[in-house]
Length: 344
Figure 1: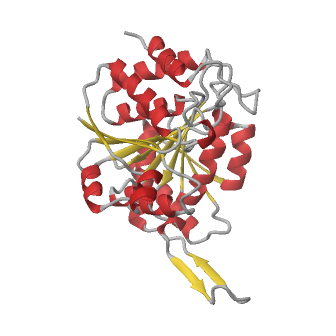
Figure 2 (figure 1 turned 60 degrees about the vertical axis):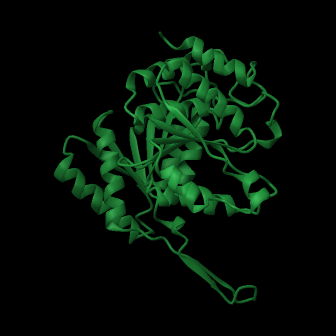
Figure 3 (figure 1 turned 180 degrees about the vertical axis):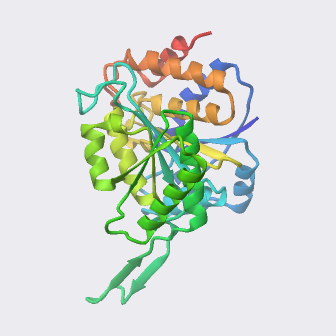
């Protein structure tokens, strides 16, 4: 298998290095292909994602991304021209975010147990407000108008809903639509009808539920055990998944996947480049290792993924904190703990 590796910027190379160390410990044979993409490339060449590099990305079996971003790069450049372009060009229409509380992890809600916080958010990743549709009228004047349109197609909604139902059928058989149907009466109505129709026709054994997005934020804090698989649109998913990260212990433990079930998927830690910690050995690599766990699962390397998960659980029980600089271990030592905790 060919694994495309985008170490990226800031602490990205450090956490990717630990994820690759864990991959080596699984014994799974992969050919690594490095990609020099991110802020440093943009600053030195003006390129973000040339067509030839995009073609190389499409030839991989999976991608591992560290993080990209730099305060010297104007906001939106790397997000739009690199990350969003990869997602759209590779049709990675599923953003998958497990929300799992690992052993020993302290969170903002001490009353939560590991059994309470164990669900998955399936976020639509290619439509909605992130398509870039809209524009300005009379920009820069006192009468300026900014329009940002949310584009939702039956095709796009149905495929993300089916993915979520399939996932729910392998877990606790409950799917919750999170939206705002009382206000967003067009997009919300489309999502609700598709959930009802697909569920009734093809997944009658999966319980269906609906929660307004604002209420979902309350339930994340008050009753997270209510959720098994959440399906939601691009914008709402972007918001609730970061709240999900906080109830599982913070960005240092949160991993995500941008998935094309029939193509090339990309996996990443969620916390960003953390430039203040670059080169200090203080960044938490567990999110990147969690991304490797997801990658192995997606490639069908189930046994290796189970071993990595066991290693993460062992390491999390040893750390003093998930926060960078407060772990009680260096970045490299956390990676070593994961390897130590992996069953042979």
